[in-house]
Image (cartoon, rainbow, N blue to C red; front, side, top):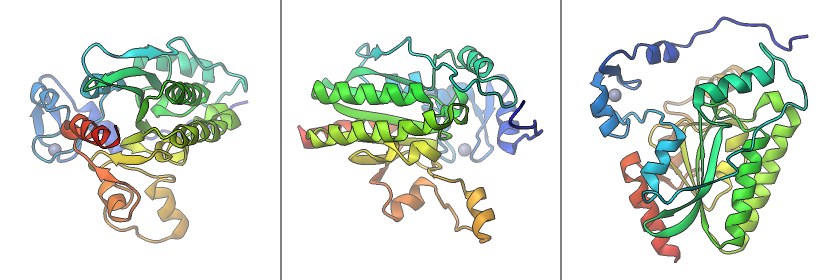
Length: 278
Ligand SMILES: [Zn+2]
């Protein structure tokens, strides 16, 4: 029995993403046509409006860490399917397809690396893998990394992007919230620093657990950061939400974030923060 019926739905955003052709690409923020090379050289930030396009997890390694210092952990860990879950298609098939598409085994990469010579632990989520959803592998890898960082006296950096908990793993997915927050809490208690970098979008169970449980919470400009999304809230409370609701700048103004930092300044900012604590 299928749990859900197929609903044909194509968002305007996906249609725009498909408009990318040849040497030029359309900015998802201002719809200006930009040379692909120029966009890539500018770390996929629009040179006209400053829109921060999503980048794959491995690009964050190059962006933040010293060259050739990343040592990946738990490379072979993969999700199994204890619930034998089927929505539009079996979860096992969905996992296989996601692995082929994202060229990763699950939605997070974890490991050790250096930032300006300082030895840190880092986890980076990947939206290309099932919308960065937090299943048992994501939770386990982040919890292990955090526990190892506590043992080895390393500060922790988490780059988050996620649609929330992975519904195909049901309660096993939700259990990761408590597990990761518990590990981060012990890391904090041992006097080490943890920093989250929230990128567009960070939502649901990820926002409600490890991504906002760190000492410092930084976000990229314009990122959607939410538990329930704005459309769900509007339909529930039957009110129009204010301009920019749940975007980084709005959340900074309401005390939910510590900083909003542009992508090209992120590494410099981390280096500056680490200098305060060491
Ligand atoms: Zn733009």
